[in-house]
Length: 70
Image (tube, rainbow, N blue to C red; front, top):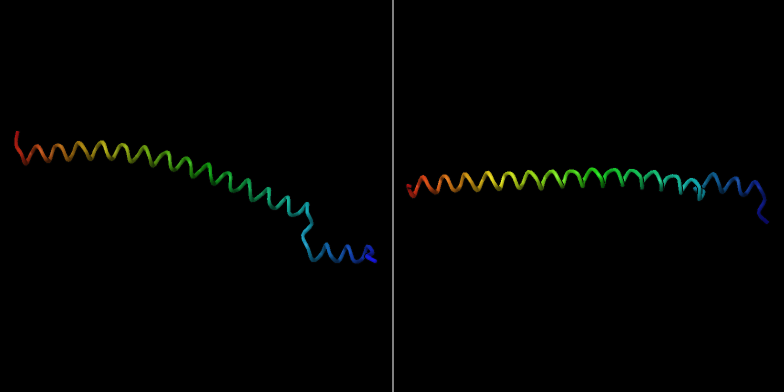
């Protein structure tokens, strides 16, 4: 049969469920923080792209007008 010494030896070799839950929770919280940061970056990138598109459109229109005349 399995006695306390066997249980202690198994605890040295394997990770207990509580330890696994703690590690998993730590990883999950880290991933959530990273996902929030990534969402912020995506939002800022969308705003920057919109501004660059507006400025680029104005510059292209100005250059086109210079070549055509007017």
